[in-house]
Image (cartoon, rainbow, N blue to C red; front, side):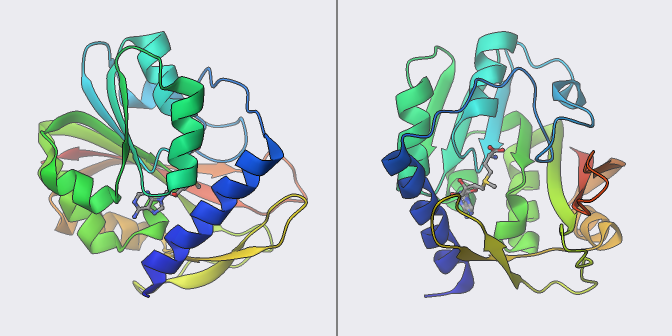
Length: 227
Ligand SMILES: C[S@@+](CC[C@H](N)C(=O)[O-])C[C@H]1O[C@@H](n2cnc3c(N)ncnc32)[C@H](O)[C@@H]1O
């Protein structure tokens, strides 16, 4: 089993843990690009009413539900973990304008019709970056928007890498065992270079730091368009 498959298994264990615990999450009223409530929100995507939108690695489906329910977007949401998919469908499967797909993100991108907008909140780092960015660019209409947030610095101050290699990171389960995921934690310059190589124009790179001074976690939000 390769690193991506092991990571997908860890996410499935994460989802099963929350299904067993009956974890309930409040509905989202904005996109949170990092784990905190600071930084820009849904407006980054521009107007999405009536547009074909893809949430890549949609997890519990909260952001996809927000876009369909509060903005009238036509949303496809794809996640590769059966348990995360189950959480999303049971919470939001009834919403009009929203379809959940249980599939690997890259396979979905290869087979789906083109999108106006694609976004990925904290999950591009779990996929091989060159393949993922190329598949995203190919799945966008010309001029379409792709926004994605990525981990930059961990809470214990581990810095990003200047080479395209995945490294192990810990996924903490409240009341359960820690899980290991493999992540591409790359410098913003490297993400930019990879995006441009894939055929995307990078418009903005936004820093989102934790609002808690004792937490060093920092994210970057990249806003791009298909050239
Ligand atoms: C950090 S969670 C983010 C969930 C969601 N975007 C959010 O903000 O709530 C990462 C999600 O990405 C999914 N994922 C990771 N690699 C994937 C892949 N190759 N294809 C599809 N989903 C994937 C995991 O199953 C997990 O649900």
